[in-house]
Length: 82
Image (cartoon, rainbow, N blue to C red; front, side, top):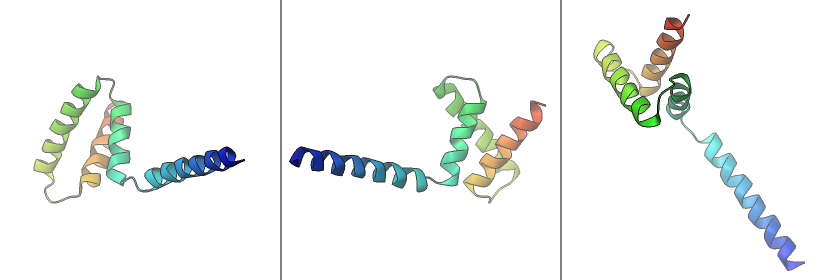
């Protein structure tokens, strides 16, 4: 009976940890994940590509938030693929 309680407690803690992680992700981190799904490159190349896109967007539109730049980059990628 004690082992059943331990298993239930451990399971509940894992579920709560997952929900905490899922709900507390920032918009920017979700947008970064979307970018990596849209580009079909190895992760290291995709990160370098995103850094170049971010630098260019920051030069063209200074003072915006990271999430704004990522939304713009994703919108541009979607537009260019049409």
